[in-house]
Length: 305
Image (cartoon, rainbow, N blue to C red; front, side):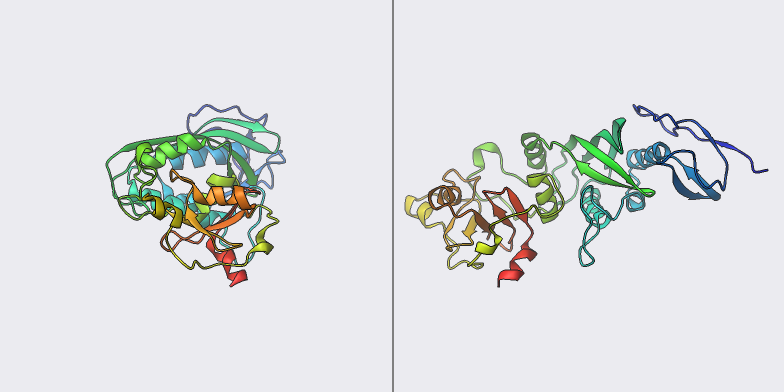
């Protein structure tokens, strides 16, 4: 008869356990008596519960073992399965985390207040580290940075899909400002001191709260994809500067971005009803629809060239 192994939480963090927590399982058993039971590879085959797998993930995050992260992340997003030609969720998140870890060698994270809620778990994610090296064009400034945000976690097989919930935009902008990725409040209408470029996937998640392309009724209205000029003519005539430029994809109007003091592209939308524009800041090409609050990565423009 095989020996029994007592399964419990391996590390301490505030956790509201499921009824199956702390049970005894047998090596090689096919299931654990729970619909959320998962298999875990070790010496022999163990069937471990989601709560134990989450605890193992939390230990990896707290130790800064970022090489292990992809083995915990599902290929699927929380409510979206990438197509065969798209990067998986695990690849997307691992790429961003790799950039962050390179910039912050002491990067760690913790999950707290982990609570079952039907088929998902809710938690608070805290990310912490020191900005020592360049990140997306911004040099290391030595700032110690902490970001806290709620997340939802959905078990998919023996891995997890993660959704970032209720991203507090002002707090996120404050964190990006600590990295040097966003100008100080009194310099928002000026070009940044160095070229920075956030990953477009990260921008989509931040601006829309989702990883997939939000439905947009205005993509078919696109008629212009390249600018005839790279100057905000209205700002120029007024002797003003701008941090970045946008292109109306319907008529070709070029105006300054929404962080400039004049916001000429936003005004253009309000005056003409043309809702869809793209960034023409350096080599950026991401697309935004004012009416549908939809964000698209640069690749979407290939359909209209």
